[in-house]
Length: 346
Image 1 (cartoon, rainbow, N blue to C red):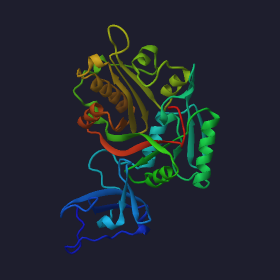
Image 2 (cartoon, helix red, strand yellow):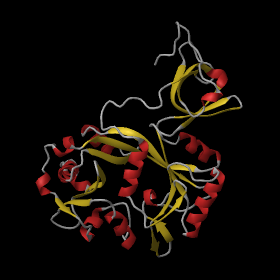
Image 3 (cartoon, helix red, strand yellow):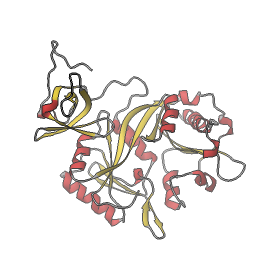
Image 4 (cartoon, rainbow, N blue to C red):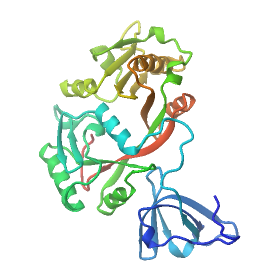
C-alpha cells in the first residue's frame, strides 16, 4: 500500500471526502513503536468530533481518532476485478431478489418492502428467509430517511414481523452510507454474507458424476426433507422456493430417507444463481455438492446463461473452500440489519 508523495507520508483526505472510498494508515492505539501502523480501506462514512468512521468491504465499521492518522488518500471507488464476470451491484441485487421472491411486496419509492411468512403454532408468524422478509433499499425511498424507516417498521409490524433492511458493502454502488445511518439509529447488523460470482462454463465442465443427479421443475417432500433452512415447510415456503424466472431443483437420491444432496438453481438471463446446496453430513467428501452444481450448471448453460452467482455466509468455511476451488470470487458483502428492539427471526 503506497501512501508516499515525494518520500513523505501525507494525510490527503478531509471531511469533504465522506462518501468516498479511502485508504488510511494510523498509529496503533496508544502509539506503538516505529512501524506500529494499521491500514484500513473502505468508504469514509463520517468525520465528526475528531473521529473518522470507515466501513470496510465486509461491512465492519472502524472508528479512528484523527490525531492517530499518519496517511490517507482517496482511492478508486471499486478496484478492478481480476476474475469473474463484470457486474454492477444493482444488477446483481435485482437478480438475487428475483431468485428469492416474496409473497407480498410494496414499493416505497425505489425501495421494495418484501414479506413471506408462515403461521407457526405457538410462534405466530415466522418469516421464511430474511432475503424475502426485508426491505431492499435500491435508490431513493422518495422521502427523508427517518420517514422511510418509520414506514418500513410500520409495514412489517402490520404483518407481525420484525423489520429488516438488506444492504451491501464492498463494490461500486453499494450502501456504506446507509449502513452507517442505520447503525446511528440503533439498527443491529445481524447476519452478513458474501455474494460471489464466477464463470458458468467452468462449473459445468467439472469432472463430477453429474449423471446421478436428478433435476426437476418442482420441489417435493423428499427434497424438503433434506433442506435445513426451515422446520415444517408450509405452502409459502414452497411458493418462495418455486418462484423465479427459470427454477430447477436437483437431488441425489438416497436408498432410504431424504436425498443425499440437494440444490436449487435460478436461471435469469445471463445469470445462473446457485442456492440451497446441502449434503447429508454422513455423505460429505463424496463430491456430491460438486455433482449437484455441475448438473445444474449444465442445465443453465443449455438455457443460455454464461455467468454464475451464489451467496455464502461468512462463517461457512467448508462452502467457501468449495467455491474458491470452482473459481467464484467475492463481488460484495451483504448484510441484514434489524430494527431497534425488533424481536423474532426471519
